[in-house]
Length: 296
Image 1 (cartoon, rainbow, N blue to C red):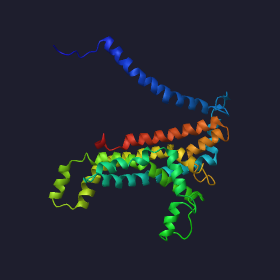
Image 2: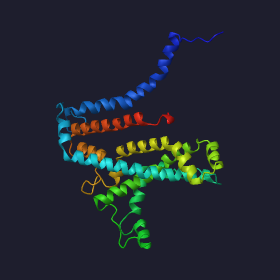
Image 3: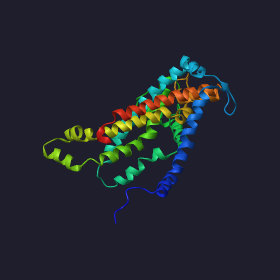
Image 4: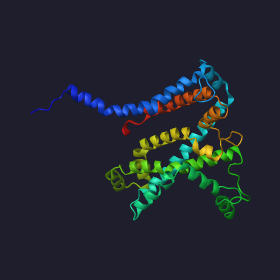
């Protein structure tokens, strides 16, 4: 008996019922907040939960004319680029180390993701203690190695605060990215690596001419995902510096929070959120357009 190629009406209805919870979840968790943010961006509303009158494009005009918005956008790009670069390089090196076939490697692979599973607030508390002025262990080590003559103020200047938060954020996220790259390394056929070695290629030539080209699509995705994550990071910066000193670490998420809950301008904060969502969407489209076809 041949299998029917056309679904009956009852089977079609059952299919819709099975996927209905997923669509309801997407509507509640994604669509509703997004639509609400867009609607709020056109209202003159100060505090969340209160009504507001229609303001048209006034919130967008004030945002685009604000120097604070453009400064925060520039810092977001610096923050995201720095975080993506550091954590991608660290993840790549870690993945290469974890890809070796040595005894006990499973333990090291498991241990490597500890920093990723620890709650952010715990990570920040530990690093604040380690980076504390004259009593922190980091300054003690730097002075013991004669790398610095006096304790470094890791959060005392805008430049130091930006660099420090980028490094801590990269330390927080690189283990997860390392696992992704490790998975990519283990999909490379060993026959290709062995064939290159038989042809006389040195280990360095095998790496640069075989391993790295095959891994490029994954590195591209890891870099892009890391950039998108970093652009959305709020908790690490807020817990460390609250955007300071002198707004030196006020990225767009922090700027949105300050606009909504410090300046009490919910409509303008929603406008900034919408503009930021458009920027993230543009990066997503960039990925869809330029992701290597070999990865798909």
